[in-house]
Amino acid sequence: MSIFTSFFQWISGQAIVFIFFSKSAEIAIVGLQASGKTSFVNVIGSGQWSEDVVPTVGFIFRKVLEFTHDPHSCFSSHIGSQGQRYTQDMGRCGPTQVSFNVGALLPRGRRDSVSPLARYRPDAHQTSPSDLLSTRPTQVPPTTTLTLFLHLTLKAEKFNTARFELHQLLSQSALGGVPLLVLGNKNDLDGHVPVKDLIRDLQLDKIMDRPVSCYSCSMKSQHNLDIVLQWLSGRSH
Ligand SMILES: Nc1nc2c(ncn2[C@@H]2O[C@H](COP(=O)(O)OP(=O)(O)OP(=O)(O)O)[C@@H](O)[C@H]2O)c(=O)[nH]1
Image (cartoon, rainbow, N blue to C red):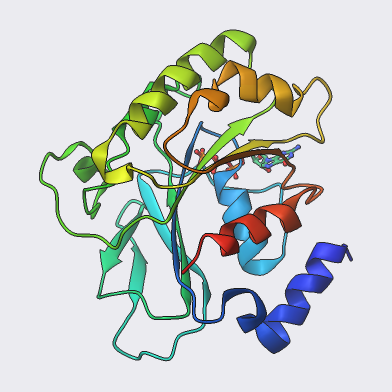
C-alpha cells in the first residue's frame, strides 16, 4: 500500500477537514486526451490507481470529496444516454465541499489534436457535450483553479500547439487571475521531458497575471500527488 493510499484512507476515515475544512474549490481540469485527467480524479477520489480508464466523452463533473454542512448545496452528476456524464448545477457550493470539474475536450477520432482545448468555456454551464460550443453563458460557481494536464511523453511539436492554446485559454475573461496548475503527467514512463522543458515550452514564466505552478507527476506511481493536493487545497477558500 502506497503512502498516498494510506494517507487517503486516513483522511477519509478521520479528518478530510484537516485539508479542506471550511473550504471549497472549484477546480477545472483541462488537458490533452489520455493525459491522465480521469486517472487523477480517480486517484484522489478513491485512492485507487487503475490501468482501465474509459475515455471521457463530453464533459464530466464529479464530486471527489465532499464534506458539507449545508444540505441545500450540492452539485450532482448523472450518466447520459450514451454514457456521457453531464453537469448539473443544483445550487451553490457548500462551505466545505471540494469539487473537481473534469473536462475532456477532444472529440472522438482526434486523439492527437490539442486544438479543442480552446473549446473549454469557463463561463458556460455545460449540460451536454454540444453545450461546450454554446455561446450562451450561464452562471456557474467561480473557478478557483485551472489545472492543465499534459503527458510528458508528448512529441516536441505538440508543445507549440499546447502553448498557443493554453495562452488563448488564459486570455478568457472568466479565467482572469485564476491560479494555474500545470501537471506534466506520466513521469514514470521512459523518455518523459523534464519539468523545466515543460515550463520553457509552454512559456509559463511569461504568465504574470496569476499564480502559476508546474509539477512533473505520475498518477500511476502517485509521485508528487501530495504536493499537488497541498497546492490545490492552498487555493481553496
Ligand atoms: N504510465 C502511466 N499511465 C497513465 C498515467 N496516468 C494515466 N495513465 C494511463 O493513460 C491512459 C489515459 O488516462 P485517462 O485518465 O483516461 O486520461 P484522460 O486525460 O482522462 O483521457 P480522456 O478522457 O480520453 O481525455 C489510461 O490508460 C491510464 O491508465 C500515469 O501517470 N502513468
